[in-house]
Length: 453
Image (cartoon, rainbow, N blue to C red; front, top):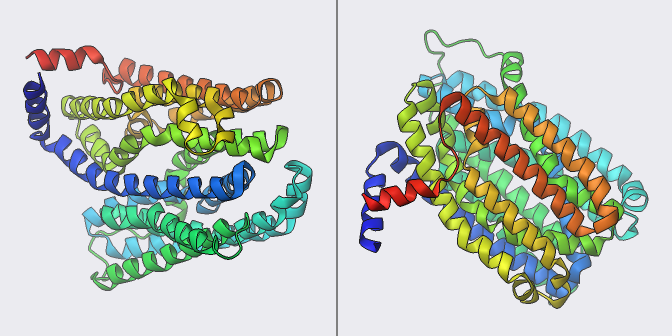
C-alpha cells in the first residue's frame, strides 16, 4: 500500500502543471511553516509573560491594523499580482513601473490618513468601544504600524507578481515575526509591557518595507524602460475598474475574518479575546498548505482556465485539494480530541477555550476539504459572484456574532465563524461543479480508486 501510494505521488508530480504548483507551493510552504513556528513561539512567550490580557491586546491591535491595512491598500495587494505578471509577460516595462508608482502614491496618501485618524481617536476607541483604557497606547502604536504595513504589503505582492516567491514570502511575514520575537525576548530582561511586541512589530514592518523597496528598485534598474511598440498608455482609472470586484472581495473577506475579535472586544473582555485568539491561531495550522499552494496556484489556475484546458485544471485542483485535506485531517482530529491538553501546554488559563478550539477544528477541516474555491472564482472571471457570496456570509457572520456572543461568549463567536465559513465554501463548491463540472472539493472515493489502480 505504501509503495503504491508513493508511486501515485511520483506519477502526479510528473504532470507538468501540478508539478509547477507543487514545487512553487513547497517554497512558500517552507517559509510559511517557518513563520508559523516563529509566530507561535512569539504568542507563547507573550502569553507566558503577559497572560491572556497581553495576548488579547496584541491581537486586538493586529486585527485593527489588518483592517486598516486592507483599506489603505485599496485592494491593490490582490490585483497587482495579476497585472504585474501580465505586463511582464508582454514586455510592458514602462507600464509596470507606472503601475507601481501610482499604487504606492495612492496607498501612501490613504494609509497616512487612516493612521492619523486612529492615533487621535485611540482614547475614544479604547474607552468607549473596548471598555479598556490600557488599549490607548497600543492603539497609537498600531497607527504607526498601518502605513508601514500598507507599503510593505504592496512591495511584497509586486515582488510576488515577478515570481520571486522566496523573497516575497520572507518579507510577507517571517521577517516581521522574527524581529518581533527577538525584540520582545530581549526586552523581557528589562521592562516588558503590552506595548513592547507592537513596537518591534513596527520595526519589523519598516525593515520589510525598506528591503522590498531595494529589491524593486534593482529590478527597475535592470529593465529597458523604452516604450514597446503597441504598449498601451497606462490608465490608473482603467486598472481601478478592473480591480474593483477583487478589491471588494478581499476587503469583505478580511472583515469576515476579523469581525469576531472586534465584536468579542465589544461584548466581552480583553482576556476573552486572548483565549479566543489562541484557539483560532492553533486551528489555522491547517491553512498553511492551502496558503502555500495558493501563492503559486493563482496564475496557474488562470492560465489553464483561459486556455480552456479544463481536464488539466480539474486534475490540478483535485490533486491540490487531496494534498491540502490529507495534511489538515490529522491535525484537525488531534485538535478536536485533545484541546484541553494542547491549550494547557501554553498556559492553564487558556484551557477555557477548549470548546472553541473544537469548533474551529471542524471549521478548518471543512475549509480544507473544499479546496481552492476562492482562487478558482477570482481567476476564472467569477469574482463578482464570489463578492456577492462573501458579502452575504460576512453579513451572516456579523448577525450571528451579535446574537450569540452575549449568550455564549467565545463559543458563540466560534459558532458564527463556523457557519459563515461552511456556507461560503459549500456555495462556492456547488457553483463551480454545476457550471464547470470541476471538483475543487476533496473526494475520498477518488483517492481510494487511485490507490487500487
